[in-house]
Length: 265
Image (cartoon, rainbow, N blue to C red; front, side, top):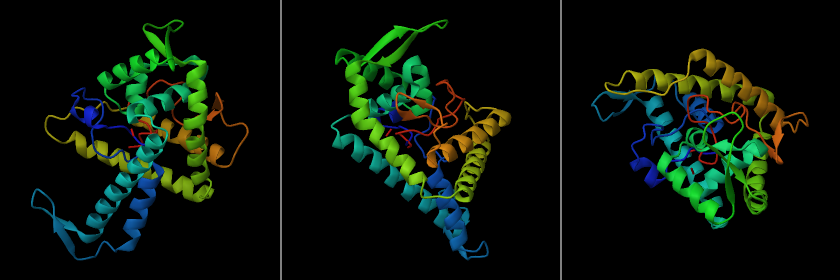
């Protein structure tokens, strides 16, 4: 799913997610790979960057393609949410709670997984609670409340979120093992490269996971995506929803994960 950054999220200075694109998803990786193959690195220099530095033509095309595909994906998720007459934030929150299953999920984990601001999650959760869609209950052995779907909420998620997840998995089934592996590898490399260069920006502090954790996340994502895309019956499932690789037990890994906000969020 896309990673959320609604207008309110972009204005919320919680330092959790940047309003730019989240690179670690399959489409971004595939596009970056395709764009790089379209033009040789020996291409003539393209337009200048905002800093005045000249950008090679192949890099400029890849940058534009990634941005275009990111915006197109975001619009797809917005269209789905709008078709069901659900707000973007509520749709993303439903997605996260549905995937969490019976164990529930903390608001901070929703913020991290879906890249939605804390204030937006809090207000949306309480609105869904008033509507009888979500209930907040104390979790065993941990502080704070965990969000669960009520019977009404589960029916809503089965009617809206579940079909979208199945569509996402159907899209993945269009790729063979080699393509899936390459896409995840490139997505991981692009994300690591972004982290490295963002870290060099003066004054920027990143909520970054260690390279070891990133590697484990990538390996888990590869296993999960391949199993789900191939319709492996042994792939983990919660409440009828295929669980995404790398999301573990609902706890954040330290960076935004791919979800309905893949970029509705």
